[in-house]
Length: 453
Image (tube, rainbow, N blue to C red; front, side):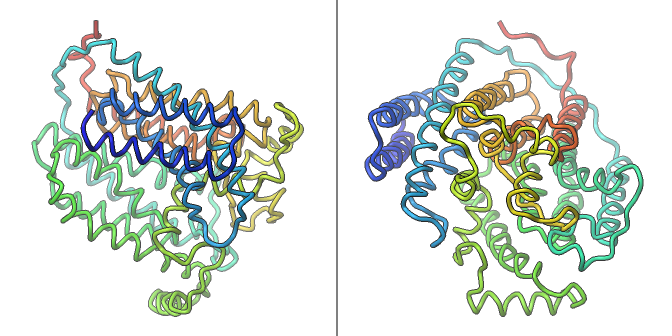
């Protein structure tokens, strides 16, 4: 095992064992912590970053969400030692479950061998690409005029409501379909033409930037560009120096937009964009960060890895006296999923208020059926990651990216709510599915594929 992998393993185990000692684990949790350390060692030793991409990313997300968060307590002065003690114990068990299953699925894949295949996809016509860009721009313009994607007080926006749930369809198209469609287009250009048209990259960047202010979303630019950036990285394999050179301005821009957009949500919608940004800067200089750490980097971290924070926030609403408790199941179904239940029942926001507290995969399962149900449901996610790392899907990078985002969403956002009728996550799942099918049809030659031995 290389030196960098050893350092990574030492850091991971240090966090696991620190939590065990700091939060006074019992013998059961100590056993699970030591077992997780053993499993992690073998995962790091045998894994390949590309071949096991989804499984590795999933394990990293789980680690950062619960183990790392409990170790360094990156939440600001909002939680007590007892809150982190509960998180450390729960996170220890979740990480044990994921590390054990990911080691099993990763080891199983190593026993198979894949025959190299040739891909001969057909180039997407320039007219079709331009048409997609035009339709995307029209949808984004409508979203701005209608205010349907605005994240904040919707009373500040005049809304245009279309029939047949078209507002929601447009929103899902922009948020959970377009980023992957852009990456499919870019991959197709690389495969068929050997280069990317610069104007296409410029459009995708501008689209993500405009979407940030249309939605007033802190992460819109990142999520719009990330699938395309991963595709470009996997094909061009740039050096570390070039990654730093190209990536630093982008990271600075994302961190710059994060607090600005957060404060712009609070400003009167009648103000101009310039006045909003000026007011936002004023609030930031005064240190007015409501409900989150004033450190932009820490706040951004918590934004991406909310699982641990949500568990601490809503712990009192989870029944820990019985392994299975479905007393809230009907209420959650009636609310259209865990996010709706947390927003409207627990937090008390009125329907149509424009606010969504959101939830996580673990919290979604915990509230629906208790700890036993949660641990059982979590078994599905590592196996879903294993499917995403299947040899067949490795043939198409853009499709793998779709599946990586979907699998991590299962842990970070919703599990049981994915199949609840009326749940927004069920619609998101449809967007992921359509993107994956298009990616396979466009960028993967089925005729060239031969099954592995």
